[in-house]
Image (cartoon, rainbow, N blue to C red; front, side, top):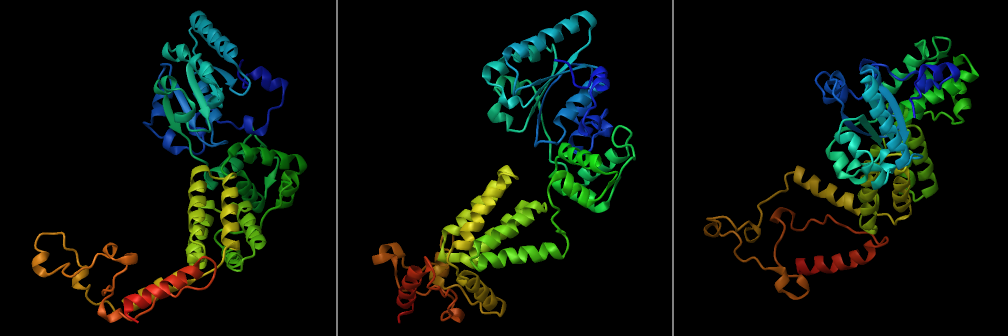
Length: 433
């Protein structure tokens, strides 16, 4: 299967904007600076004439196919693309046989690019091994999944693994601006309004290919590309939301207050607005984790577990799937019984400490494990609670200055009601009342 970038194919079929704008050299590549700087492994490999084997691992639209094409273009090698979605062992072997034949007849090397290589089963991956081991091709495999879980170890150990990162907003902005002005793109025939540009950047979600696809759809509707044109082309309304301005603070405030007010529907609405506006999902997750202790607390101790799990899930899988985990946590937080006793308790304790109510740690509670502690009387008279009925023993725990202070005042809400009963009995027992 020959490359889609063959010049004859270009003349026969107009290519999508995303294909036309693919970089031809490493210097034209936007983003992935950690892979493209002077002296980096990829630079050295491209500048070398020896065959190589690479795995490119990263989210969609980060330039995996682009880098494979650039390697082929810069090194003047044939570019042959095989899709793991549709190809079988027969297709792989045919591509390798053609590459060997070309190498033997003309000495020209071939870049064999396998897209979504993680979809190949073990037998299909095994078919690649002879070509990689014998350097019959320059093998480049692209994957959106962790290759340590999806690629056989013999193939992975013979290859260099390069990790691609999602493009930043500045990167996507640069991709779009180049496409508007470059002769291979819109060639200056269209203008892109600033608000439309920012909307496209948000819609792209770090995916360069998606941003160019949306830009091309908008350019088909009008030469003067406004935000209204983009909304019509993409069929997605622009969310008026400035992550550095009033909307950011107003929406997150409404989000927190809706969960505090137990309105799950309103909270989900504000969650959706933030997600659609391109808010950092990690920021949203952090606010939910804080809320779980600040506004739910001991009324439902499992709420914090859900919030932390959602934050970890978002970190692990990102968007769009992470929106489900965020919604899970939001619904749990909104529908849970509420208590701010935890935040009031630590606030009161910190307030006393800041006012100087500190005092000495009682001698029987001090560390008695180091040499000389016994001579100082540290630990003398300490009573081990597990040696007593119910695991409780009356002794002084707090410094004298705060002995009668009451910090944790549980509510009667949800799971905190039985805790309130138990804590009242424990406090009375320990204080001797």
